[in-house]
Length: 270
Image (cartoon, rainbow, N blue to C red; front, top):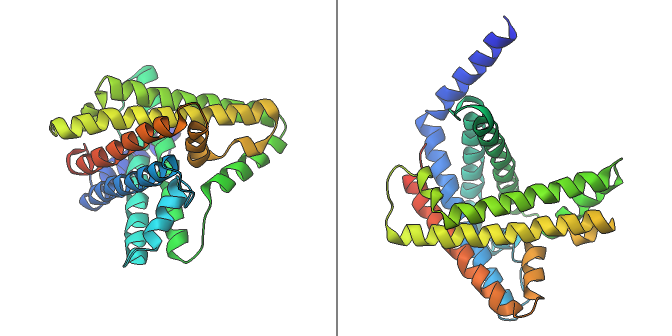
């Protein structure tokens, strides 16, 4: 069997998996799980803006909040399964989805591949906490950055990651401002969803730009501690002039993204 036949067979299998009702249903559960996580992150960020220093305002803090709720452990397993299903769907999109031609196709496949990693990480975090273990996204980010900095050319690699994350953040801001996220849906979800999506994508984009900037700072100073993920980025916003007001606005925007994610679970193209 030639390489072209192997590739064609892989794409055909991916398309079949992509169209499978179970995979599509799990992808929708994953989007709803993302909505819940973003609402909890928004709540933690708002508490931080108001002066509370409880759970870290990031994915691990949100998951640990769920752990403390009645029936929290079963819910975490549902979320873990949803994120795993969403990651699987993104894999089938990356391999077998239709992505146009040329640069558009390359960008679309890379985006699906990147999302696969994000959803796998979220699923792993949910499963880890459901098993009774704690996680700390900020420490994990700093540790990972530290390992990268030890590699030959590590500072350049971390800098490239920072630039990439800034680019992703800018993409989110543009997507929110232009309302182009509506192209991901099978129908118009209404004014509430459109407004929530717009402010949500812009707020999440701003947070990601700060995350990328902190990666860049870690690369420039050779200090892994500068790279602390989303929680560190929101703390950095808090420390700026008018920080509580800025962080409060970002928190409300992240809540909007969470609300939009529930609409996306219903109306997304799968």
